[in-house]
Length: 157
Picture 1 (tube, rainbow, N blue to C red):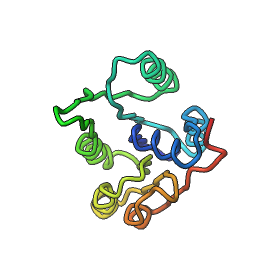
Picture 2 (picture 1 turned 90 degrees about the horizontal axis):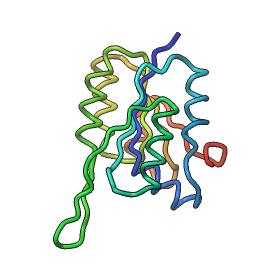
Picture 3 (picture 1 turned 30 degrees about the vertical axis):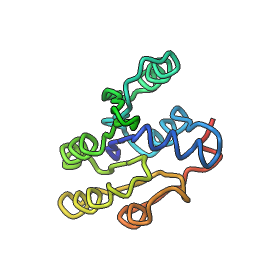
């Protein structure tokens, strides 16, 4: 069986599906789809920690599905902007996991990950797959993946 590692940029998926479809991504259905393709050996969901009941419920649901939920504090800057970027954390985890799996699945539309995917393909010959909202996914990310699957209505709640 194919060994699959899954990495979810939760904020990116939340905002892109909301903006494109006004709906939420269905993580349970996604998990079921991937489980039919192989064994999910690691599944990390990277999110921002906020004191919000809806967020706690969502994170609990992700854990129930099988995801390891990694949280980073939500930082409100004095100028009103906010920070909660997981790009480096996701990159480290992907680099550490890639040698031990057959496929790395990334849920994100963030073009910053294009070099990461190219690097793990070159170094470990791992298959890379990206799921993202087509009109909100960087072309460089789409082009760097072995396989790109646009998120569509069937993957939403």
